[in-house]
Image 1 (cartoon, one colour):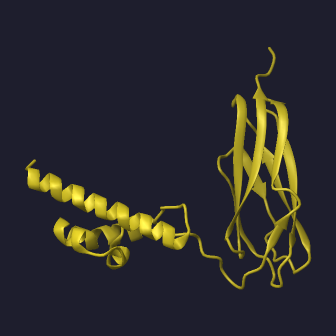
Image 2 (cartoon, rainbow, N blue to C red; image 1 turned 30 degrees about the vertical axis):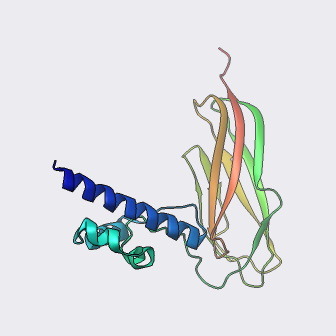
Image 3 (cartoon, rainbow, N blue to C red; image 1 turned 90 degrees about the horizontal axis):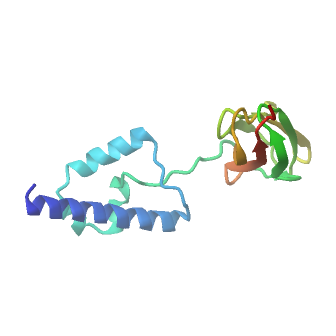
Length: 184
C-alpha cells in the first residue's frame, strides 16, 4: 500500500474521531451507536469524498456524514416521569438452576399516562413482565423480574431495560446475585 493512501486513510479516520467526539459532547451522550441502515448511508456519503476533502471540512460540516453519529432512543407520545421504589435487587447467595423473583414497584409521577413500550433483560436468564396498559398519573404499577441463573457461577450483575414515554426513554433495573454450585 502506498504511503499516500496510508496517510489519506489516517487523516480520514482522525477526522471521523474528531467529529464523533464533538457530536458526543454536543449531544451529552456516552453512546456512539447508529443503526446499521443509517451507518451504511452515512458511510456511502463519506466514501465518495477524498480523504483530503474530509480533513479540510469543519466538524459541523461533517455532522451529516459521520458514520458513528450517536443516536439515543426517542420517547413516543407526551412525556411523563417514572419513579421506582427501588431500581436494584441483590439476591445474595443463590444456587444454580434456582428461580428468583423480584417485583419492582413504580409510580407515574408525571402528568401524562405512562406507556411502557418494552422491558427487556440483557440475557435470557433475566425475564421481565410489565403492564401493557397505560398507567395513569399518580398510579402505581409493577414489573416482575424472574432471574434463573442456570449454570452461571459466582458474582452476576444483570440488567433489565425499561423503555417508556419518559426522558430519558430508557430506565435500567439491576439484578445481582452470587451464584453457587448445587452440592452433589
